[in-house]
Image 1 (cartoon, rainbow, N blue to C red):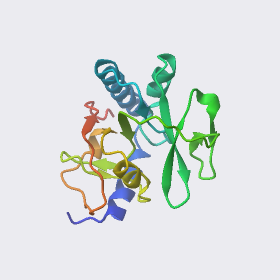
Image 2 (spheres, rainbow, N blue to C red):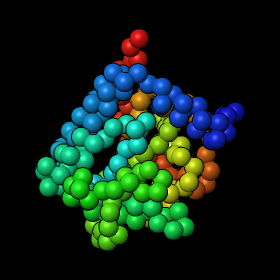
Image 3 (tube, one colour):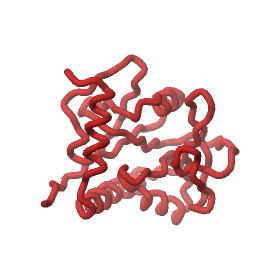
Length: 185
C-alpha cells in the first residue's frame, strides 16, 4: 500500500462528494434494503447506528424502520477524549446538530443497552474487514469496547479497496454490504 491514510481519505471523500445524485439514491436504496432484510432475518433488536452526513450513505430509512418497528436505536454522541457515548434515540425529534454540524442526540443520558449490531461509518474498506474511518479514532475506541457486537459496514463499489494502511488499534468489520450497481452516466 503506497498511499497513506490521509491521502486515501482525501481521495475517497472527493469521490463521495461527486457521486451523481441519481446513482447515490439507487445505491443508498439498495444498501438500506440489504440492512433492513438482515435486521428482520437475524431478529436484531438493539442496533447502534449513526446519523449520516450528506456525503455518506443515506441510512435514514434504516433509522425510520427501527422506530416504526419499536427496535431500540442507539446513536453515538461525541464525548471528551475522542469517545462516543451511546444514546437511545426514539425519533428525529431527539436529534440536533452539534458544533461540527453532525446530527446527534439532544440529551446526554447514556443507554445501558448493549448493541447486538453496530452499523459503522467509514470512507474505505477491504475484503479482510479492515476499515478506513475519518481519522479521529472515535469508532476504533468504541468498537474495542464492544467486541461481542457484530460490526457491519456499508460501501459504494469504489469504497472497497484491495488494501488499506493498517495500524494496531484499527478495528475490523465482521460484515460488509457493498452496493452492486455501476455508475450511470
